[in-house]
Length: 529
Image (tube, helix red, strand yellow):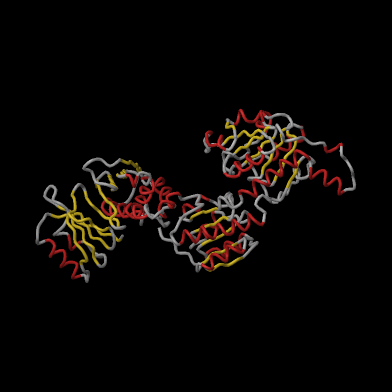
C-alpha cells in the first residue's frame, strides 16, 4: 500500500517540532486552530492528513467530507474523539503516539494520589483565604495502603512502580495484560470483584470503551471500602459522575481526583465544587516534555510511514505493520495479486464464495493473516464505491459475507519452500493458485494444479486463458492483439492437464473486447496488477 501525502492540517496547539519535521520531509503544513465544526468540514477536503490532540472531534461527517484524507494523527494517546469505524471504512489510518505522554500522565496520577491523601489543594486554598486550619486537614499516610490499578498498560505500570516507592501495595486488573506480566512490575493481578473491596485508592487507566464506560458506578462503589479514594486521569466517563457524587456525599467515597470529565469543559460543576474533589482541566499530558515528545513522535511516525520505513502507533490497521516490513512487503503484494487473479477468473465476491489462504515455510509463519487481508483487497477491488485497502478490506469482506480461512504448514521434505496457496470456490467454479516471491517480485507457480515451467511475474497487464496445446493458437491470439494495437511482452504456458493448459500473456494494454478470442481460447480474462 503506497502513501502519497502532500498537505497536512494541524487543528490544535502541537509542539513546533511537528511542523518542522514534516516540512523538512517535503510535506506542506497548514495550522488552523480553534476551528468550529463547520469550519473544519469546509477546510478538511483539501488535505491528505490531519493532526489533532483531544479537542478536535473527528466525527463521521468530518471524515466523509475529507475526500483526500489518508492519515489522522493524534499527538497523544486517546483516540475516543475520532470515529474509528468511519475512518476504517474510508481507508484512513488512525495513528497515535503511544509513548509520548506516558510519564507525564503517570506523574499527574501520582500527584492526585498525594493530594487526596494530604488534602494539599484544600489546605492551600484555606491559607489563601487567610486561615490557619491545621486540625481540619489531617491526612493519611500512603505507606501500607493498597492502590488498585485498573488498566496495566504503559501508564498503569509507571504509576505502580512510583507508588510502590511510597510503600503502597499495588493490585490491579487488565483484560489484556497477563497476570505473569503484571507481577514483573510488582502488581498482584486479580479479578475486579476481588479488587474493589481491598483498595484504599483506585486509579483507572483504560481507554473509554463500551466495556469501560461507567466502570465505577453505584454497584461498584457499594463493593468498595468505605472512604475509598478514586482517581481518573484517563478518560471522562470511566467513572460514572453522578454515582461518584452520590458516593462522595454519602462518605462511601472519601475523595476523588479528576483530570477528565464526560463533557469538557464541564457545564455542571457539582463535582468540581465539592470540597472532597480535586479537579484539573485535563492536564495529564500538559507538560513541556510531553508536548514536545508527542509533537515530535507523531511527525516522525508519519514520515517513517510515508517513506515506507516503519509503522508505529496505528490503531485500526494492524496488517499495515506487516506491509511495512521489508521481509513481508512482497508477500503482501503477492496476496493482493493472487486475489486479483482469482477475482478475474471467479467473478464478483458474494456470500457464496469460499476462500482459503495457506502459507508454507518458516518465513511465513506469522504472515498468514496479513497475506489473507491482502487477498481480500485483491478480491474486493472494483466491487465497492469505497477504495479498498489493507485498512478496510476485512470490514468489507465481513459485510460481503466472504468466508475466508487461513492455514500455515511447516516445510516438509520434497515440498516447496515459502509459498502461498489461494483456493477459491463459488457455486459455479473453483480455482487454486500457488504463488511465491522471487527477487522481490510476486510470481505464479501453479494454476489449478498445472505447473508453469518458468514462474510467471504477477505484474503489468495480464491476459489469461485456457486452451488446447495447439501451436496455431498463439499466432491467432497474437493477430487479434496486433489488430488492436497491442503487443505481447511475455508469454508463459503451464503443463498440460486433461488436454488443456493455462496461458498467461503480459501485454502492453488491455484488450477492450475479448470476443475475438472466442474461437481460440476458453475462460479468457484480463487484469492489471
